[in-house]
Length: 462
Ligand code: GDP
Image (cartoon, rainbow, N blue to C red; front, side, top):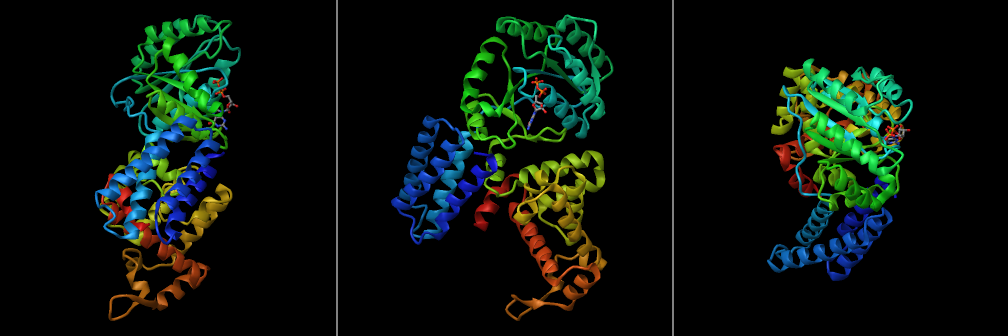
């Protein structure tokens, strides 16, 4: 099952709780049956699925016995939803922190993995990822086994505007790797990615070569690149590599549209090796940072505040003063409509829309449907709306667009809404929608009150 389908099914199962008049054992069993069926369809190992079912039951029982439900049906729902959420996180969490490249230090990252898994593509994606975050990045092609490997690196690195090193004449991969790393270290590169061969006449030779390259370049991190389409067989492949060429982290590629993605991720987590990124397409930007909790949150369509804040901080490296201020506002929950507009603009400037939009809680889901072009068009209309607002309106929290009753509750819309709709060539409905989305976002940020508070905010909204 494609990951998005898995997410939809899990979400549907969890949301079905909201419709159940009482949350008793029968309802919990039905929910767990749905959740487990969805996971199995995604090729998650039967044993892991059975464990998840058992753990959720135990957790819910313990929470209810300790009085967490206080007799309220709403609280029982939250107990169950949180238990399922937490166990889904556990399923993809290896419990190990990966190495984090440091600035001002030559971070050598060596990529290993079988040919065809997406290693060369991923090396370029990684270089682009770090380059965008202010690391001077480069690639060393140490694959001399496959004819055309260097050409592939050269082409993709040139396209990505990333420095590269390789040779058409030198046949010893260890020499090339050592030369390339030495050269880039001298030139003070921050991230040096070494791409190795993925095939040999004999497997043992491949592993021997990896070890030799590793000894020559002394990587700070060795990353195994693994294809999601092998599903739970990922565990065996990862273990086989680990026995010969030890590695510290994994990147799972081809997560886009592959039926067994969930199986691959959970299988890797079972080897206690951190997954650091997911490859989600063939383009340079199709690389998603992976952390267990935000991954599950995004999978369930709950947005990813943590990822969003990190993204904002990433843009901060390109436009430091302005964006740092924005990230701070987001964390403090003080967003005006102007900030919201800036955020939409940033999203539009930050590459593939669907990826970033899925991080923003409160953005309408239909924005994610259809092509990126369609989504961009919808976002442009949102910008047109804000373009027709006055400075005072932009700097406000949107309350001046509402009529307020004596009890402090909104009773209707003011003339401003019509004026903005007319001015922007949109409809009153669209302006209303935008204000509604802005409010949701602002409230969410306020409740989140920081990077890690998002989960509570989401739970409060359910
Ligand atoms: P290598 O032999 O391991 O170096 O693999 P390549 O980098 O040459 O990739 C093999 C194929 O997989 C190429 O056609 C890539 O475009 C494709 N590929 C790599 N990563 C992804 C991914 O995340 N998603 C998709 N859909 N294709 C990918």
